[in-house]
Amino acid sequence: MAFTTALSGVNAAQSDLDVISNNIANSSTTGFKTGRAEFGDVYAQSLLGTTTPTPGQGVKVTGITQQFSQGDLEFTDNALDVAINGDGFFQIKDQGVVEYTRAGAFKIDKDGFVSTVSGARVQGYQVDATTGNVTGTIGDIQTQAALLAPKATTTATLTGNLDARYGNLVTANFSATDASTYHATTSMAVFDSQGNSRVLDLYFIKTADNTFDVMSYVDGASTTAGAATALITGLPFSTAGAYDPTGTKGNANIAVGAANGVAALAVALDITGFTQFGSNFAVSTATQNGYSAGQLSSIEVSDVGLVSARYSNGVSSSLGQFALADFGNPNGLQPVGSTNWVETFKSGQPVLNKAGDANLGLIQGFALEQSNVAITQELVDLIVAQRNFQANAQVVQAEDAITQTIINMR
Image 1 (cartoon, helix red, strand yellow):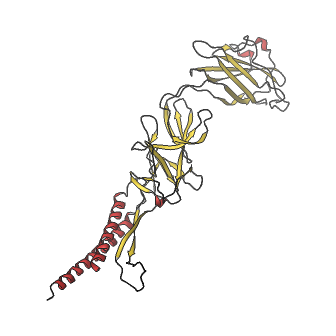
Image 2: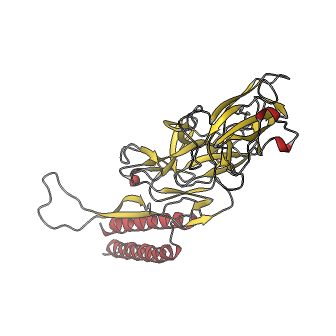
Image 3: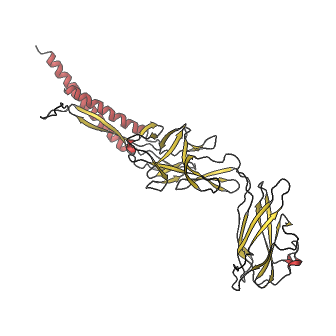
């Protein structure tokens, strides 16, 4: 009896040593969670139940639980090294098999997908191609591997100030090459259907009190019927110098016909943000929505897991948003290697949300979560497990000696 009891203790101590050894071996493994062997005593019991105290029959391993405490963050130089600071798991998929991980050492594979080192694709909320907004659909996160297609300018907005101290001029005398025929000018780049940069020039002429005409040229050619025909006639301002919203003359359409294989250019111009104060002419902002073709230059990840691509043309676009999974019982997850887990009946089904929602952690870019193994504690546990093993081995030796004595009795 004591022999088998002691053997169960030896086996339990060996299991404890196995767990501790695995923890120490993975002390530098990204996203690893330390394990802990848990034990329970063993008692014999008849079908009718135990009515008198009996000696136990030893010990057994009741389970090996994982400790999902937060690991330290180590900062890196890779934008796709991401760590979860708080609860949650990244969801990854490899040939239809769904797994979960805390190891965020991601990369871009040959097809432009955000993936793990082993090739599993990271799952995230998709982006609507038309609006650029994140949707509720979960799928692979893919970057724009080829050149980003150009976009023709369709809107342009300028704000600034026109000097109220200008004297009046006659629009009919306007000449783009004669600075004495206009009061102020500004330029901005717009783009055609092939991404070619075109120069939009605007000329401002004060024709009467609180009134300006605006001329427009693209690549040095007038966009109106004649060189001295205004794009906007009578841009109105109030006596206080603000744009007069009673009219609609702060908006105009600039049209350039198709030529040289490029589609016609149509730009809706908005200059309602201009003022007319007794101060020097100045343009405060000039924006337009077109751009040239661009090559992927960098990836950025926000604290809520939004993955954005920045292109060589200065454009930034959203590619997707990491989906984080939460489980009712994370300890019920089954480890499958490579610091990955799969769901089980004990863990419950995953609930997917965005980082920062539903008590999930935030994303830390340029960082990796380190193993949560505490080496000092593991070494202390190692000594305890070793003593347990040796003590049970002593019981085996004692039982062996007793058995030999009994056998040798005459």
